[in-house]
Image (cartoon, rainbow, N blue to C red; front, side, top):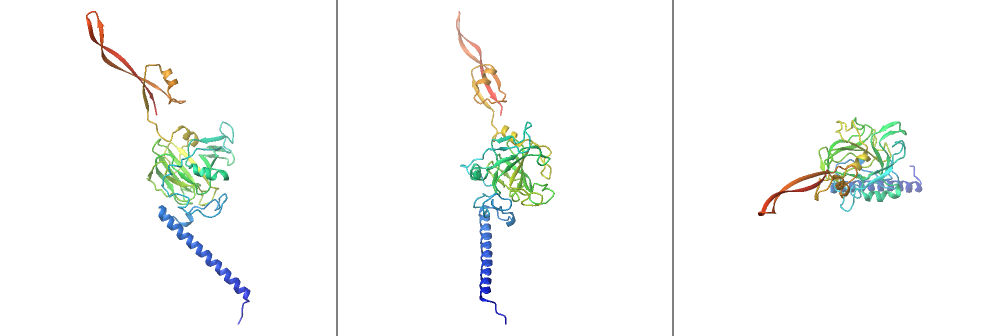
Length: 330
């Protein structure tokens, strides 16, 4: 009979102990994640679809996985009233604006919460890294903006809207290099908005309606059949025409230019009664006047009966009284 040395037996015990501990921790983490998913309403997602933290595949730093529910709100959840969607700044990258690559780009509002911008500021922040147009670095036409952010960063609806198209299968024909993606139509201006390279299949199904501030997706790097094809970022497109069945647009607008000229709310026409004055004076003095806004002067008349002294005494006569209104279109 062959007897192993005592030192070998101790090593085997240590190895077996490590295996048991690892399996135990894996089981506990899995069960905890599933429980939190049930609580947060996202049960049913495969473990491989759970977002990894900045230290995960394609991440930019940090350690450990995101456990859905501990940091990320569930799909469709509304952004806290004390937290606001933020504007963004950045660079056009190798896309030239007015002949200049690396042009500064700004948007007045975005899918990202101010709290996440603050949290990621020390790691480079959430910034625009590429504009729309011919990109010399890839020798191709870039159809939207790229926004760099940590993997798993929540992206919220900046307008009320409805989900119109989704891709939930990596490597499918609809993947088209954008991985998991979602298209939604806003109910304020009627435009279509595309979020690509998501870190998991969209949880909101086609036809789901939502309010501004609802969680729509999370930043990832998926594409061409892989969950980590790219460094984590949002590929952001906007179009004024509906996409095809595969979610791809036939025409595109510059996301920044669109955002900066379309408010987060559709303002109703403002009507104010003023003393009669000419249109130029009204346009100059109107507090709500902005560049590019047309001000119309609407003058309506009202006939009133007033007493008039005549040689034969007091008589009632009709008199026209103008009432000028200023109309500023939405």
